[in-house]
Length: 215
Ligand SMILES: CC(C)(COP(=O)(O)OP(=O)(O)OC[C@H]1O[C@@H](n2cnc3c(N)ncnc32)[C@H](O)[C@@H]1OP(=O)(O)O)[C@@H](O)C(=O)NCCC(=O)NCCS
Image (cartoon, rainbow, N blue to C red; front, side, top):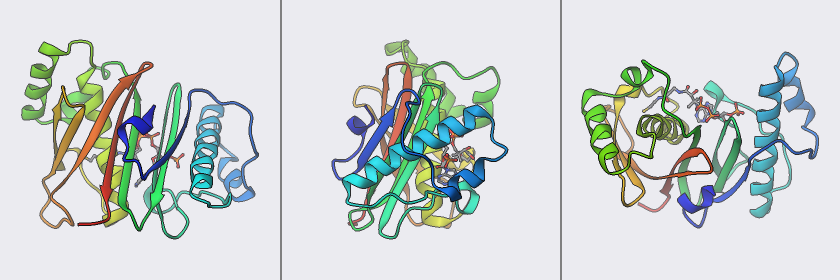
């Protein structure tokens, strides 16, 4: 499903449950000694997804350990992103020679809990969401906006190793085209923004950003 919103040179694998599979590496297991069952399941399945995607690039199985601020550590020459939520796990990887950065995010396609939108969206963004809902009342636009911001952060962080606040990206969707733009509102930045794609299917809201390496 997520490959529908990624460039063709990104390899993605996903899962809608937690089927049995190869064991984790010892270094990964060591991170789960105090983990609750939910965390163990999402951590394990998403890494199996990532290793399947890496195998399609010819990369042998290896531990995928969280690095600085939780960003996943990928093998040299690889960029990627992982996401998990109830009913979905997904991983996307690409050659760094072709792709500068990737950010993917999945959320249940349900409205955000009360009060959350005000903490993640500006007044302008909230007004836009109301306008999108006129033509597409079937889409939980507030959740999709949240997902787009998470994808922005996952694409931004590996490039800059810096925090980005929810107020520091202005998101605008094109409901008909299935795309969005994120304008970065920070002064010291390697690029002006990101473009991404969105999809709601099987009860999951998905967003994805792929920045090509050229240009
Ligand atoms: C880190 C964060 C983006 C994760 O998103 P989430 O929707 O909570 O959770 P998801 O399941 O979709 O993603 C989790 C995965 O994100 C990845 N991730 C975590 N920190 C990351 C970082 N700093 N950079 C890139 N990827 C990161 C990891 O692979 C993680 O999975 P893992 O712990 O199993 O390795 C989120 O928790 C967060 O801290 N957000 C605040 C920053 C932000 O979003 N700013 C908005 C900018 S507009």
